[in-house]
Length: 216
Image (cartoon, rainbow, N blue to C red; front, side, top):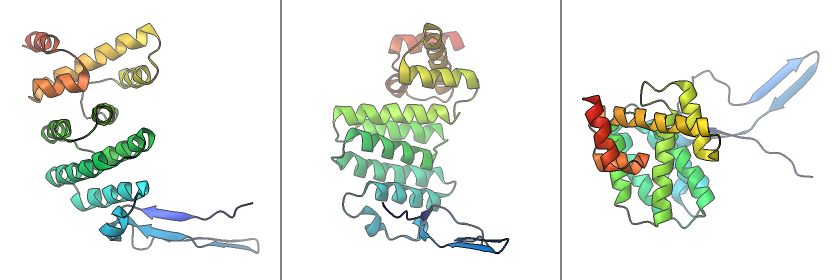
């Protein structure tokens, strides 16, 4: 018994001639649906960040990602700022995880240097142990899902994700180990710090040293 309401959340610049409403006129039947349009790039930062609005933080991230364009340095600085805000919130773990996943997808860091720096920054943030582990876990998953580490087959990526979420099927778990080893080889190639690689993958320093020697 509730009336539906539509809202379009626009996080990037749209074509000039694109309609911001729906209309149809066919066989004498006319339908017109005018909805609220919210342009994140034009929103006031204070409004987005006011109160305890979870969506506001995601929209602020969308705005920052849009402003950054392809500038990885800007993305890194904004992501660091939003990480500070996220860590200070006392929201429940479910909400925090959803926000964190959305933010990481929006910024889409591709430079391994900035990717490792943001993990190191998070490790030094004042937050609970659970939040810190959640951040690194989400960052690792988003990083892997987007295929930023080349050379990992699509099937293996699926095995990594499904195995991490469900922990089932021995063969899939073996795929996870193989996938992580491939990830580590790529991280080593990018000269990422050993401590950062260990934190992301869960492998010990000795294991990583062994993989580096095999690469040599």
